Image 1 (cartoon, rainbow, N blue to C red):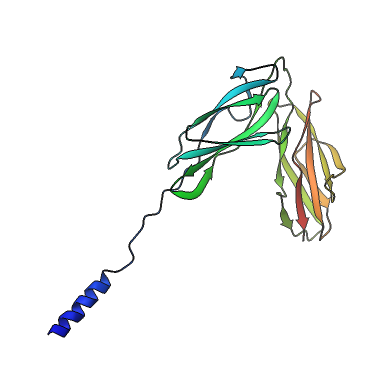
Image 2: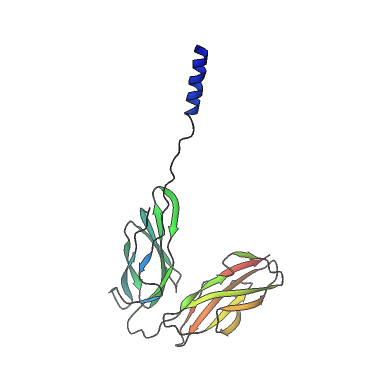
Length: 228
């Protein structure tokens, strides 16, 4: 009888040693940006000098978030600054008459997972500005670093242009297999160039120059892709 009791106790204890459920931490949620508004001519801020002003960036509280990484990019120089804050606003000194983009990354001390907000662009206005240069074009396809199978030896280039004055008149496409690509096509009125010739085994570089009715222009970042 003692042996049966001992076996019963061992089986009972074994049944109680199953894995303990550990709840997973809640993941941060991406923040909703509020100011400066998307594609806006930003006129609200404090003027510091003829060349500088400061703007207070704001966004909504994101769930499951303990801090935010604020990222700001000067779209002319491509200079990027990143600051961390536990608040939902941050005041930053900016150059006037300059386009910027910005976004916020939600972070939590309970997980390494993060969530990035949308990327918004705006133009920090300056004195006596009546016409604004276009935002540098966003490269859509091929994406940066993409490997492409071009079976027919041709690919299509697509991008997105934007201008707070809504007066874009044309695009220039610079394309080639060197890091300083030559002009391939000028006076395009739509953000696409189809049937561009490519050769397998080569890496290609390209960028877009956007022009507006006032004679202003902007240049996108240099992108690259490879043909398999």
